[in-house]
Length: 402
Image 1 (cartoon, rainbow, N blue to C red):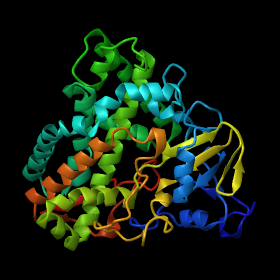
Image 2: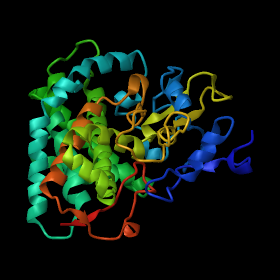
Image 3: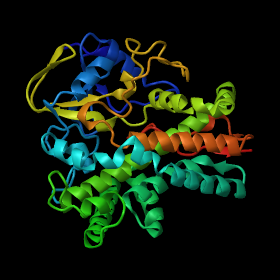
């Protein structure tokens, strides 16, 4: 097979973004090739890379592709991401029919109505962190002072993490997602999973009024996870519910501060913030590794036959910039009418927490820019450091002043 860029060699993945507002150049090469191409992962394994919008949606909706990280052909970036035998893969790594039952058991906790009930508490969390920001020194790092802790506090409220443990969660979740070595990642993963194991045990002994506590109060019901699976679910909720909105908050604030005309539109009409949040989610597409799969049988996709046991990456960063689906996809436009991005995945594994993430982002951006109208970047854009080498795209820091 001929690969992009006129070579028979697979492209290396992950690929760095040469501009914070653009996708890696290799994605366009992969998308424009007549058939799906292959990439080489940091482990040395090869995987198919699906970048076209329709191909990504087709793959994510096809149960012949498995989400089980324990499968030997699953395309992991680092080996420590494979769950230890004593822990579950959580909802993210389940396949039907187990996934169908387990998701049904918890879906009621993640409806828009249920998440909207958290809006007042989310507003309190945001207000508290804006107050701390205003009371602190200038310049301030918006990532560490606001973008990271706000979603963390919200997800801890949801799953029932004791307040005194939240600094631990901020540190350990960042290490798991941004580890620079396999050993560091493995140690952090085990430390976090051991904590989750203890947390779930405490909920089983004395159920509380939160997602984990309500599940622990329903042992034996169809689809309700047992202890091992609940530990995996707690891990998944924490990581997905913290990292993605935190990175969107940092990157979104950076973009809006660089586009004062857009920011003024939003200040003048806050009802447009939901559309702006959706466009930020499409434009940056923070996380895509959760859309990895492994073929359970031979499947035709994007002009090639993917053999049973071969790994596939659903590169939603590329799909969300596919000109066949989005008009002028590289333009940030809060009035965009061609929505339907796949930033939260697609199909049966579409992100459970998407309503919570949207509410958090809407409240956070609206409050931040209303309370600090003079907010501005404290350093030139070209000095900012981005998480190009990490699983989830984002900013290491965002110095601001006012």
